[in-house]
Length: 81
Image (cartoon, rainbow, N blue to C red; front, side, top):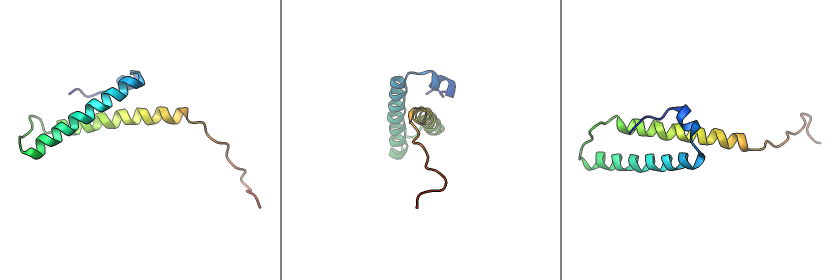
């Protein structure tokens, strides 16, 4: 499981980001199930790395959503009334 860099994530197409996100979430579920079952993990730090990758992808997705949002005009400072 490779650690993704922000530049790599930003360079991906939105569909590819969503695919990677679902892959990481599935892998995280699999690793957590292995940990709970007592099977033991080859590398216990893999869960942390997966969680960080998910957070990085979600950060880029949220940044792009905010860019696309149209900000509503703000109300005058004096208000009504």
